[in-house]
Image 1 (cartoon, rainbow, N blue to C red):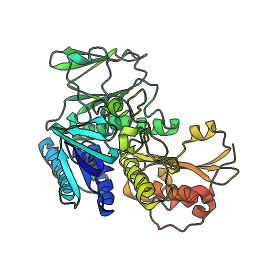
Image 2: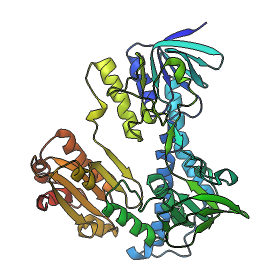
Image 3: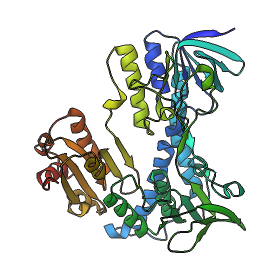
Length: 459
């Protein structure tokens, strides 16, 4: 016999708990099902633990540079990996436990531990229980992609999840994948003291960014002693004693890199392959992402998909916005859509890269005539004062409409300052509104109006 609820939420990631809060506050009975860890990727294997490690790595890096600031330290800087891991665990457990306690104390919310599978359009099995609801919300997230590469089954491979459990320092960490996950871990472990090599199949790192950003990131990683191998034609793996040999076959350099540990960071896949979606008739694409419309509804009435499993975003902030879109349409009768969202994200290397809207190559491919403002961080007073002058600021304006099309801030505080630009894009205000704003000195943000006063000619 099935137990009926007003709504079922599968997964306690970024969107699920907040949605449960709104639905129960509206008087609905909700079953929230979680088969593993509360908080999803962000809390357990993504933002929270990795940015905690970024902070530890930054502290080590700054300690090594203390003499540049007139500070003398006695003895060499040492990193205690067990203490680093313990700090990471303390931070993430506080967040995870807080979410779990909130849900379990929520009126009209029944928390179920187990693996949910569809056995009909709005009926699911969880362990030995069957539950039904008129509304079902899929929020199952994603995991690391492990493609069938030559020799991959013969060696030990780390993913973004398993690398977080290390409490000893790798002698030589080889990272396959030169995008966001790979580069953040590369800098983290280099600053902890490991030798690090990044192998990228493409011709440059973070290839979806403009070439100036890619080159600048490569330059400061190289300055920290991180080896980068691009144009890796056929990546392969084989045991080499206690080590792992990674074949690269690059056009130059040694044909293989031998390391003590290998991190595979080549993409993500959705956790949709074991939900019984076909039993409910829910459509997925060729990569396994649940297909949704602009309001996150699937092809089956009464079923929505939120977060990483719908392919509409791979970030905590987009997952949370998915919750806001569903709640606005379902409960508030406000028409909010995925297509209203402006692309925005950050690469949390040091310095970070904050991005909003279009990059320059995409803007030009879209046919815009643009004006570009550029300034190196060496000409940003706040960066000079902090002794952190790597990177640049860049902003793009439509030459005809005067709309801001996008911006990249690669530099100290770039992940925060970018929101000045993002908010103006959302407001659909002309760039002169931001140009005439009076920002606080000394900050990184104060140079954004200056950038807009120094725009180049239309091209």
